[in-house]
Length: 522
Image 1 (cartoon, helix red, strand yellow):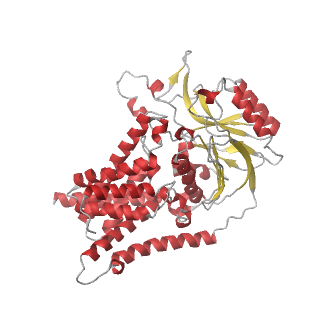
Image 2 (cartoon, one colour):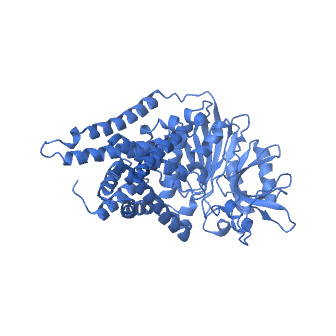
Image 3 (tube, rainbow, N blue to C red):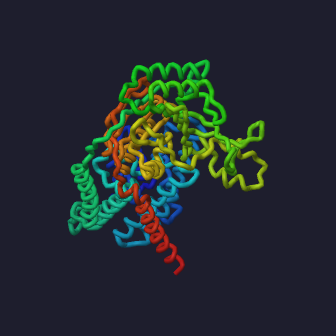
């Protein structure tokens, strides 16, 4: 590999990583991208040099992969792209230190991969979480190759991607140094090791897929709505919040059958909000329709929750009468018996939905009303919604579905299938809504549950428990339909044991970085 210009290497790597994600999508290009990045590391002189010259790669990747963020908020989207690229460059700088420290290809490959996967895992945990470009997500369109994540969780795919890439790069490097001996790249131990690791994992996945038994005697009949409201218009262009509700329930009248057991509407489908203390006309109308149909209706809605019988969280709002409350992005269930239930979104989009670190900032002496400036309240509890004479399901809201642990928590609580309600209309007809649908395929494999999606403008439909698309609606269409959804009880190894693989990666990362810094002190 004779390319020595760091900027060319960085730019090419960024383009290849961008092309690895939907809607293109060519995840195998990630191997070539990281081969170029490891070449860049080889040419770099220290942490700063590696981070500095790798930043363009991650910036190009973020722009190609998530340019659509700017359609929801130009300032927020641009800030997210710039900041996420900077964090990635810092992580790559740490990886550079490890590959320079360890001469063993096995140690260098595994420990540097551990650093990257640890970053991805921690990026799922904090208030500035933006895990959209986790490497494993690129493989959501090639689920035949990643069936093993039902044991490990999806970050193991990121680990294999980087580890294999490092072995391949080492093979190229060794071949270039052995011209006189006429050793070809294909004959190097590193190439053989890297390709063996990949083919073994892919073969294991194919064997699992071949032997996967998805037959079940239990199904549930679910009606899905895709109302296709325009998110860029106030109240979607209507004069009030009741008219779109009446139109939507009228459309549902033609879809509900005697077999229907539950109905899901997307995020923000019920406009105007739901107040815990009193029932509006919209609430009463939906309760009457639930009673008429004999099924629960679950819809996304803003929800005002008051703290009357419990202690209010540190960050909360106060109304004119001095009552503590919070404003949530929620899923609200209307039951035929007149009762209601609520799930408050657990993972909120930083800045757009909630100010990061608001809880910690509220402890400072700054003269700020944190309840008013924070944005949405953050949910803490996973709630399942029961169907009529059938199983329960969560209604994870939009961003929730990108976080494996949120979905996992619902299956721990015995969800028979997964439901995602979302409004991807803020992104327009871009790759954003396509990626969001595809990423849910990984949640299906991790939990071995069918995933049902109700999206405002699309893509709505169902993904089977092996990660394959079953039903996909067209974007920007108004429709409603019924699905017969398979129900499962088995809990996968990942569901039962959670982030065990990620803790292993944390150990690898700490081992590698300890080796780097201990050597520096000697």
